[in-house]
Structures are given as structure tokens and as C-alpha cells.
Length: 205
Image (cartoon, rainbow, N blue to C red; front, side, top):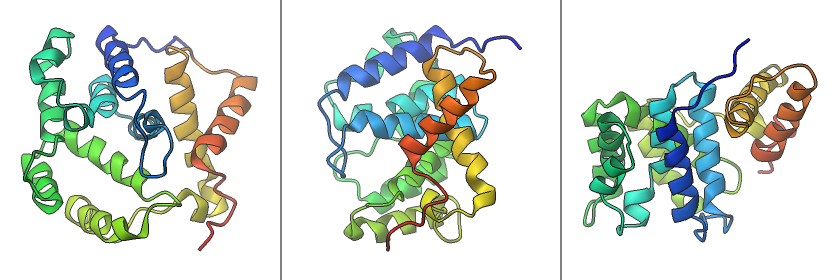
């Protein structure tokens, strides 16, 4: 099997995301870069390509760091569709969260929608602040429909493979596209459990 080549613009997107968010914390008081890594793993596990991965790395950049602008992303060599999706995923000043989600949905932009779904899945992981759950439930209903996505800790044993797939996708990406063989599968699965939780362990209620 051939190694998966990672476009230069995706590597640049990751580097910019890691630099810009280096000192940021998420709502769990954990390094924000971890959230970006999980969203990237999510879109990779769904089979999305490099443009979606680039959007995943930078989906919060313009909102969290307004010192960056669309022109900066274009100057970095990001494709126009990637920059357009990042713009769609940027919540503007004065815009309610409900308005923001409605705009993302109405855009019909496949790149933005794929990343926002992965973003919401990560927000539903165990430990999410209770006061934010109603907001994310409504957002999921608008974008996807139905109830919330299953949490890793509540998946049945048959779904353990998904944790592996997500972790393996992240691991493969982090290793600059090397194809995994043999013992690397176990290493990737361990990374999946470390990052996303063991799906065989019930989620504390």
C-alpha cells in the first residue's frame, strides 16, 4: 500500500492552528488543540479528503483570533473552497448561536457541514458543561436531525472499531501519511482509547 500524501496546504493549516491556539483552553480547561485534533480525526474517520481536514484544523481560527483574516488564509495557499468554508463556520459578532447554526445549515456547504458535525460530536463527549447541552442538542437537530450522537463511552462493544478508526486516522495523519501495518494497528488503537475514551467503559452519569 502506498503512503497517503498530505497536501502542503493541509500541513500549513495544521501549523497555523497549532500556533494560533497554542495557549487556548477548551471548556474542559484542556489545551484547545486537543479539540482540533479530535475534529480532524472525526472527519478523517468519515472518509473526508484534505480540503475538509484543512477546514477542521482552522474552523475556529477567525472567531477565536480575529487578528487573522480571510486574506491571511489565502496568502497561506489555502484553496478558495477551504477559506469559504472557514468563513461560514465563523460566528460573527452579534450573531446568536441559533442564527449561526441556521446559517451554516442554509449554506449547504459540504465542507462546512462535515466539519460542524464533527465539531458537535466532540462537544457531546463526557464532561460537557450541562448548561451547554441544550444548545448543542438544538444545533444537532438542525444540522443532522434526531437525537444527539452516541458518546464513545456508551457505544456497544461492536462499535469499538469506530474508536479505532478515528484514532487510526489521526495517527496516520500525524505520521505524515504513512500507511499502518501490523503492530502499528495496536499502537493506533491505544491512541484512540487515550484520546477518545474506551467505548467498552460505561460513561459516568
